[in-house]
Image 1 (cartoon, helix red, strand yellow):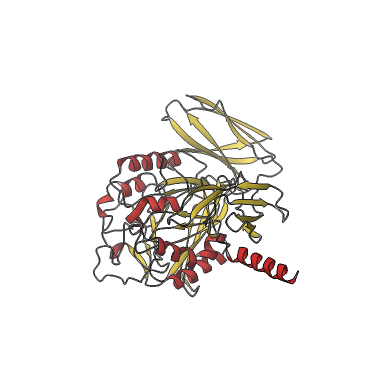
Image 2 (cartoon, one colour; image 1 turned 45 degrees about the vertical axis):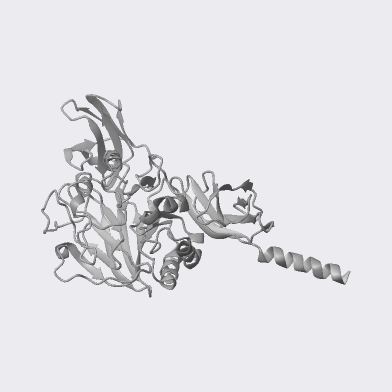
Length: 490
């Protein structure tokens, strides 16, 4: 009996020692609540996951979808969750089919409601040289519990090296296991684009995942492949996506991420100069708010830049998305790659407001019509802070305050869509002088007038036959309270 017990415990120990699940990471085929995926590596044949919102894993047990890994010894397994409950804890465990055992209980915090406009995200990139620094920086970012992270490329020195990817996964294991990450390809990653693409379960467009977009809250995020700027299919998709976002009054912010920077006073000055008349012009034409890149190994923040309004060499006065205002570009390339200094006499010095030669990450908090942006170094010291604020501007279509004693649908127009005549109807207990404004998709104020509201219901007819076809925002402000609605003029 004693000999059998020894053999039994030896067998159990051998199974535990053979547990090979690693490289757990989160992705999404869409936004953080719709299409969330978990992916892991193993040398088993039929791994699976069990999960739920309690420790009982009440949602069930599901097989992982197997695909080839980046080495001959390991495979990837993926499970895509159904639409998840927002702002809760997801409990899960992974089954190792090689060791024939379940792993420990793990947790993941789900995102806030996708219909809201309050969330956070981090940004970082370029971690390829010093794994210990990547561990430090990524753990600091993870501790802030962002809704998701934008990772802007260059995970390895050699993008076709399986051993270097293993080093990356080991160094960032805590971060990847606890954060949803949207990746873009860096120039080093592009040594093997197929390998890079296979690593990440992220949105796909045109049968690929090196450029894509997703919507969360009042913000559209667009990720691009800056290794392939000559790709006209990508460029046409970019312009179409930006045009749709500009025509959507429920989108307040347009945020882009990719690897190479347009304005850079460090080592890689000039890398995107030839695309200023294509990509950057589209950013200016459609009022992009924030561009986040990597590639230069430091932290940089530009002055407001709008090449439609002011030529190269001169920034404009204010950040913003409306005519005449400028884009904000941030370089966060300090995830662990060897640092680069500022280049004396750089052609882009005019565009650079902040330059900090340090390892870093960026934490952004979106709160309706405001984005607060803070950058931190590897000691978690604040190195930069600013706020983009659209409150009180015509392009911010978020209701500023709740109406008194009223339901959400206070302001309506009918018919909608229309080709000419429309009736505006506003119903609330507020009375007095009201201001009605009609704003087009570029933020231009087309109409503004004062009317008197003597009773609960206000009816105002308009003939819009002389307006251009398109989408308009209509607002009514009374007693400091504003309501908005959207009109489509066909």
